[in-house]
Length: 95
Length: 222
Image (cartoon, rainbow over all chains, first blue to last red; front, side, top):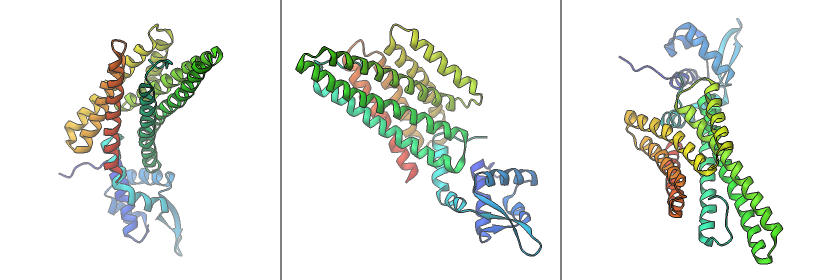
């Protein structure tokens, strides 16, 4: 059975999914890639928008919603290992 | 202990000031690293960790700088038989001790609050208020202060001991060792009234503790 993901891991997985799709992704694609329930994904997306790691935009003729990785989001992905290491080593994980 | 006496050996005085600056910069470095992490995670625990080490860093900086002024004032008093300079030095020294105690207790109690995984702010307020009331009304200020920090550090060290048992990595060992040495250092400082050598060994033990924490941090951020 797969180990339960921590919050930082889930954020990393969401941001990685957006990066791997060229920097922007539709909600349905993200739901599939992130392996989260719809409610949980929306909670995380609100959190990420608040932290300015992603932005919500309308794109295309039909003005469909898309999530775009911000520069801070790219920075998070680069620094992720160090951030995770610091949090885990100093016991700063939060539920 | 914190009040510098004019006829103390110069190496004793300067080693104390040097140690304070090392402690201050180490705590500041840890605080800045934690703040960098907080910028990404926006986690409450990381914010508190940043503030705790910033508070401890400020305590050491203030103490070191004010002790330099005290030393200069005492030298002037000694050279020119200046009573005014001697009294000003005493007042500065009292100010240094008060700042040091407040910011250290705030920092260490906040660390203990984080380690106990407490969510209610009332718990931290309780730690801080009980400590400050005890310090204000005690007749043995420095003994009470170091005993309080020893108690807080024992909970912190135990938390990191349990984490090391779970993780069993070099970094977790260094962090546990760091806080254990700080605990031992503060305990030696608490009993330094028995012998001045405990003051010296306490400072060196605390220095070893901060070096261990710094080393673990460098392993993490590299």
